[in-house]
Amino acid sequence: MQAEPLIDQWYAWAHLIPPATAARNLTHRHLRILESFLNAPHVHANAAKNAAMLGGPFIHYGRESVAELTELRRRTRQERTNLLELSAALEQLDSMLRTVPHDDPLPPLYEKVPEILRGYVELHYDLRNNASFRLLEPLLYRSRFYDPSGQSLILSITSGDDRPFALSTPRLCSPGMVHLRWKFDDARVDELFKLRRAPKPWAWIKDALEIADEDEQTFRSFLTSEPPATYQPHRGAGLRWRYFGHACILVETAHLNVLLDPVVSYRYESNIPRYTYADLPDRIDYVLITHNHMDHVLIETLLQIRHKVREVIVPKGGSGSLQDPSLKLTLEKIGFRCVRELGELEQLPLRAHGGCIMGIPFIGEHSDLAVATKLAYMIRLGREQILFAADSCVHEPRLYDHLHAAIGEVGTLFIGMECVGAPMSWLYGPLLLRPIERGIDQARRLSGADSAQVQALIERLRCKDIYIYAMGQEPWLNHVMSLKYTEQSRPIVESNLLIRRCVTDGLGAERLFGEKEILIDRLSDEPVAISA
Ligand SMILES: [Fe+2]
Ligand SMILES: [Fe+2]
Image 1 (cartoon, rainbow, N blue to C red):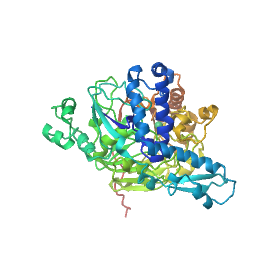
Image 2 (cartoon, helix red, strand yellow):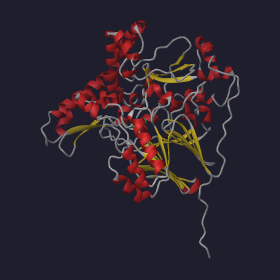
Image 3 (tube, rainbow, N blue to C red):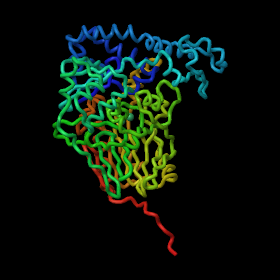
C-alpha cells in the first residue's frame, strides 16, 4: 500500500510546510503550473511524455482533467488567501528594502513593512550594506499563515516503480484510492503504519482510524491476513549497515539503530533487489537528516516510520532567511516530537560502544545560496569512523585537511556524486524575489562533487572504503528525482573514473544501487588496561 502525503492535492515536500516557502511555492509554482495547463493542456500532456522534459513544470494529465483542475484553482484562490497575501507581502517588503539608501538606519522602516508582515520580520543589513530581512519563523507558524487543513494522505495499491514525477502534477483521486483528510501530525497516521508490523482486527482498525463506510471496501483491499515478515535485528558484536537506496542507510549494532536520510521503497515484485519497510527495526534510535532537499527529507517515508523513531537529528538552522527554513520546526509540525539540532563538530555521545555522532561541515550543492541547514555526519563506533557526506562538494580541499587534524582518519566514506545537478530555479525558483537570468540559473546548479573533488577528500581523510551513493538511480525515487542516467551521463562517467582510481590505489570503491549489506565483525571498544 502506497501512502502519498498531499497538501491541497500537491505532493508534500519540506518547503510546503513553512508558511513563507509554502506561500512562494503556491504562487510561483503551483498556480503557475495550473494556469499554464488550463491554457494549453495538450502542451503539458506532450511535454510530460518527453523524456528530455522529465521533472519539468508539466502536468501529466490530459484534457479530461481540465474541469477538476479548474475547480482546484478556484478552491486554492478562495481558501488560500492568507498564503497569497503572504507571498505578495514578501515581494513588497523586498522591493521596499531595495529602495533604501545604503547606510540609512533601518528602525524607521519598520512602519513601512507591509501591514501583514509587521511583527514577523527583523530588518538588517549584510556587511556590504544590502538591506534584507529575517523571518521570525516560530511566530509565523503561530499566525494565520500556517494552516495545515489542506494536508491529507492518499492510499492506493502500488505494484511497481513506474510512479510519474510527483512535484508538478496535483494528485487527483480515482477509484481504488482512499483519501484520508488527516493532518500529518494526526495520531491516526502512526496507528495506520503500525499495522505493517502489528496486525489488528478489522473492527479495531475501522474504529481507531475512523474509516468511512463508503471507503471500507477499498480500504480493506489494502489489508492482508498474511502474518507480517519477521525482522531479523543485528545481534553480533560488531556493526551492520544496509543500503536502502539513494542516501538512506541503516546502521545497526546490538544496542543502536541509526537511519540516515530515510527514503524507503514499498514492497512489490521487481527484478531490482531492495530493502523495504519490512526491513526496518521496530525502534529507530536516531534518524539523521543531512539537508533540506526533497530526496533527503521525504515526508512520504518520514510519516510512515514516525512511530518507530525516538529522535531526529537535523542540521542547525533557523537563520530566518526565506531559502533556509528551519528543518527542526518543519519536522515538529509534521508530528515528530523529539527533533534535535546538531552543529558543525558538535557531538552527540552514544552510550553504546563509547561512540558518538558528529556533525561535519557540508559545503556547496545549494546553488551558492546562503543555506546553513546542511550537515554531513560522522558515526564513530569503537575505532570505526564512518562519514556520510551526502551531497557535500569539495570546493575547498583544505577543509578536509582541517577536519583530518580535528577528527583523524575516516575509514569509510559515503558520498554523492550527482555532479550535474538541477538548475537553481528547479528548487529555489519560487523563492527568488527578483528574476534570474537564464545563464546564471543554468550555471548555479544543485551539483555535487566530481571525481577530482572526491579524490581530494579521500586523500586528506585517508579513506579506505568508498561508497558512492545518493545518485538518484533507484527507480523508486523517480517521483521526486526525475533522473535518467546513461553510461555517458557525467555523474556516471565521473563516478566510474573515481572507482577506477581508487581500485588502482588499492582502496575499496563501489557505486551503490538497489541494496547492499556490510558486516563489520567487531567494534574495537574493549577497555584496554595499562600493563603492570
Ligand atoms: Fe542535495
Ligand atoms: Fe541529493
